Amino acid sequence: MKAYLLALVAAAAATSAQAADTMAVPVPQAPAAYDWSGAYFGAEGGYGWLAGEVPNDLFTGTRTESADGGAAAVFAGYSHQLNNNVVVGINGEFGYNWNDNSYTVVSPYPFLNGQSVTFGTEWRASVEGSVGYAFDRLLVFASGGWTATRLQGSFSLTGRSYDEVMNGWTLGAGLDYAISENVFARLKASYSDYGSTDIISRATGLQGLPDSKLSQASLVAGIGFRF
Image (cartoon, rainbow, N blue to C red; front, top):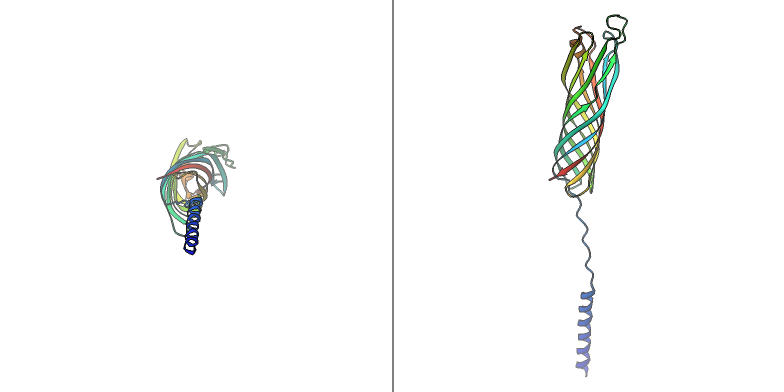
């Protein structure tokens, strides 16, 4: 009898264990964090605010004239995500600005007063290093490096046109958001300082005029593809 009871208890325990195994619900695995490592390319567009510090009356002082307009570019780069979610990388851009402007010279000298100067930039390029922090699919970053643009314009008195490639530095900050495993959206603001030039002296043929300085701020949005 005792042996029979022990057999019943063992059978009941085995049945309970089998039922528990059958009813156990598998625990879902947490999705892996997004990895920003890899190469990418994309396109962006937005608006730029160009500021030219130009001679006030072609002889004395300077004043700021603006030339605002649309901007578009293509970009490509490579980034690497470290174990602490810091992301470092390098990014290159090449684009075009639509920002021509014209201003009238106000001068005490009759032959200069009322003359017009046009200026604006065409293509632009940059190579920047970047560092950021990844919040899973959101990457917050800052960037900085070399930039260049082509300045062009004309002076009505002499009828001369001019152009010059100006080099400088650029700083930026932005957000990347991974829409899918291979597609991300970008929002970026930047400031570029292209230095100074004696291009007004060369356009007018009058030596010793104040140098002109050129800078630009821009805000762009874009779409990128990782591979």
